[in-house]
Amino acid sequence: MMQMGVPPLTRGVKWLGIVTLAVSILATTLGYRGDSLRVWVHFTPGEFFHGKFWTPLTYTFLNLQPISLLFALLGLWLIGSALEQMWGTRRFLIFYFVVSAVGALATAAIGYFVSSVRMFEYYGNWSAIEGLIAAFAVLLPNAQIYLYFLPVQARWMLPLSAGITVLFMLMTGWQPFLPQLFGLGAGALFAGGVGPRNLLLRVRVWWIDRRLRRSKLRVVRGKEDDAGPFAGSGRGSDKYLH
Image 1 (cartoon, rainbow, N blue to C red):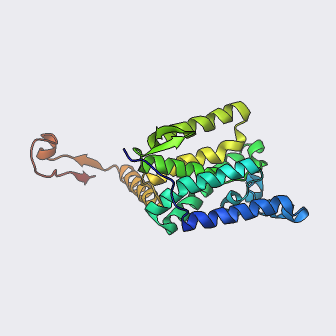
Image 2 (image 1 turned 90 degrees about the horizontal axis):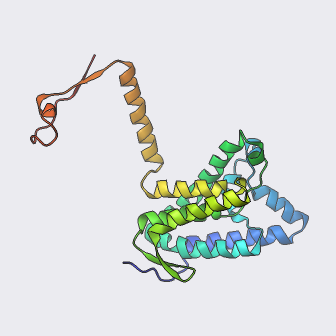
Image 3 (image 1 turned 135 degrees about the vertical axis):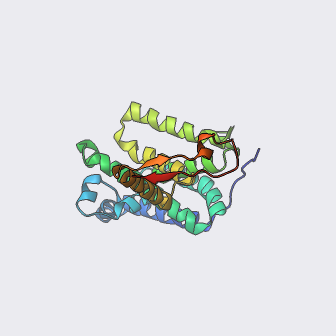
């Protein structure tokens, strides 16, 4: 069983932490200018639909509560650094922003139909942190980490994070935690190999299959196929016929 020690402060994590810390402090200490910064970087589905298309990438830099900011930076360091060491800085940063953007865009899709979500103000990097947790659990399932001083296998972080998020949604309101839930799902999918290229390939395969079905093509199996998959070593003679 792999045991995870304290990772070093990697380059991508360091700069993400510096920007997050700076934006969060400035937004809460500069008075009306800080309020303007907050409005510029936060994510609201309604404002996104009216032209603020950059906010799914910038809302992760804003944490307005000190405790939330502290734990967000701590999670970014402990989990993000381990993944950046594995992936490299470029891939880690792409994953970080893609997961947070997917969480925001999926929330915006719900906000298009639900007014309480459309006008909600979202900020914080917890959607990205949830995605990193999911990736860590998928890629290093046997690693042993310490959760509140208790040793836990990394594979259990995914259901634990999902369960805690759902519990908060049930007890305190579901709107604030939508980006986190979607970020967790996106992290698990992308870490498991379902990336944009694979998704495009699957869409193309689905489209070709649909065209074939509309053309009323059918499959005619050869003798090798009729004998079953373990009958011999020959390849089947499947053909599409009108």
